[in-house]
Figure (cartoon, rainbow, N blue to C red):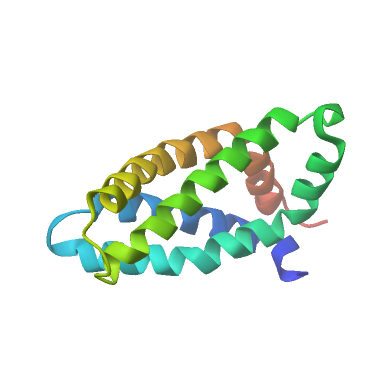
Amino acid sequence: MKLLRCRSVRIVLDVTLLAGFIVEFLTREGPDYDLHSWIGVVLIPIIAIHLAGNWRWVTSTFSRRSQHPEWALARFNAVFSVVAAICLVTGFPLWLGWSDNGFWTVTHTVTGFASVVLSLSHLWRNRRRVLTLIRRQRAPAL
């Protein structure tokens, strides 16, 4: 857990997540579909690590709810997490060939598009936190 407090690790993790979502979005059709699927699988533990690294913020925000200054951001992040989880879960029956049911395809596609939009919005809403991490990383040691 100490490693997740390292600014460099958090920056690399966040950039990897953003790049992963974008590459996964770009490879969603055509000959790169296997790449799309494997990127989705690889993103699962990266998302889990990202959540673990921010778990203290999540628990403190949800324990104080409306009294917490970032309660609106926490609710947004929760919605984003649910949409991304639905996207991941609905992708597995398609990838493994268990079903070609239109329900899974439509649900996966809609939540996939929503996840990309929400991930960019998530980054935008957390831009101050990200910029602070980057500035601290670049600050000279005394």
